[in-house]
Length: 550
Image 1 (cartoon, rainbow, N blue to C red):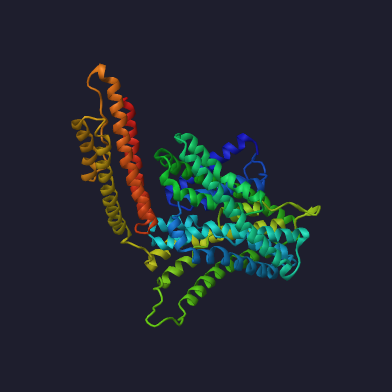
Image 2: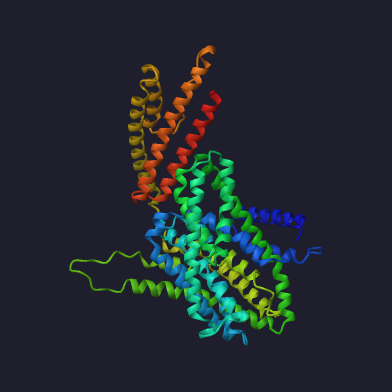
């Protein structure tokens, strides 16, 4: 695919996405259908997908963008259920799918069946989180789903590498795998991946704190996910975990960075997500025609593969439902404890129904299926097209069955926290009161520090101009001081700089209070980000006005 064709693909994919979003349709499904239809048009060439390139280019930015928005405090608090869904459930699904595939696809080698299980094991919670956010799912439920989507890809890709090694002839043992070696590979992937991601995050944050150039900082942010992914992979770690660790760390420390960078990054990553996901689903639609043709030319019957696709689809759905409800039943099992001890209250069963139905597959499943090698040991990869067809079928099937019915299920069960906006407003009020009190205290300190340098009347004017909006709880901009006479221009600029530094100290104090309240768990991360965004807009207005006065 040359540059012109890639440009046309991107433009067409974005146009289809825009129409689907406007009509309220599932954009991934529409893109696959449109791409499949376009592949039959005269003059449309066969798309050659470089799977490894697709993984390295598409996966890191998508994961990094999601990780930036995850609450570290919430992730840490719910780490146990997140790991159970993101790691244990992925491995259980992969093995179960492999066992079913061995039955429904006659002659399928066990290592190849495990490769298929690894490909279809990780759900993509992006669409589920989007639906949940629109309908007001409880914040705790949203954190679990978001956290699961970040680590399940790492577990699935690591298991995929182990299974692929078995296909290449390095396997042995139960189900064709050396499980001892697999455990070592998984442990190395976790340690190296998380270590590289955290180290890179610390370095990037240190560099970012010394920069005062939002453009350069945004470019650095674009580089981070690719650097984390490639470095971790070079050290035989999980590139996915490297990206996730770097993203969560930098997202947690982002309030310490410059306001302009934060204001730029959010729309930048949203646009990047939209473009990459649109292109991937469009590519899969274009490639689907040729996958079906290869199946027709192979020894596999299309009808039997269609039945196998239904069986695998049912398996991935049922395994998640059984796992989620079985795990919840174990959690609710009475256990002996100290006298007077009462187990923590569990969320209602309706929450587990929603979690069990958020198993839609997405970009990762499609990208890994496209990345299957064409040859192994000098011959063709066993049943490559069959595996791709089954992966595509599971992705489309889950999007149809679960993606389209999830909003109605949430509404019918009433799993919606309708009081959350009111609680957010109350928390925001509390947070602003704390930040305002700290800011007023800082103003008094600055007045005392500047008293020898600035005449008392002017200093009182500055302080009043800062205190006024704070006490009135407004987010309006305080105007900078301007020299009245031409011969006082230099003095005016000095006064403006002092006033700007004074205002900057106040904003810094308010941000510090936000971070302290967040880290103590007193206020939800979403509320902190809302107030932080208001401060960023206020500082942006302050900066623009101050510059125009100089």
